Length: 224
Image (cartoon, rainbow, N blue to C red; front, side, top):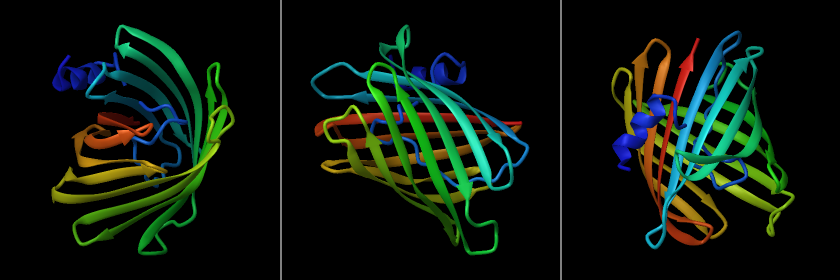
């Protein structure tokens, strides 16, 4: 299956993710959306050079409870292809805004609780930072994660991104993720499709679980 067909599958709703306890593939951004609901469709894959790809489709529903608190229920699946998937994790994702336009940057607290089926529970939390420098949007996040079932139960996670606005509704740049002895980086593209729909896609090179692999991710969000 080609990368283009994978994107089409996402847009049709048959594929959409990242299990929260796994290395990061989605950059967390601060947002304020009181009274708004967002349908969150995600998809990511890991493709090692010496083996078959693993796919993670994901679907979530987010609600802006107040101007400072947003909460989301996110379900994640895993499988070798889109026709053979099993539920991997149930995620409860929360974000608490610490600033609201009173500073030249946005700052929030990210808190994600993960129920990994058959593998125990996990939690991820930390600050989310975003600012603008000219036409470039800069993001930097630092998370602490605890996985009760993992051999290495505690680890730090770093996320970063630089997106340049080359015309209204269209941005392109680079993003990266890192954990101890593991990192990924590559180009990212974001487009506002109209009607409250945003699409983000990225292709990353690096390693995961200390092994070389290429990674593709896509996220479609529809706010209403």
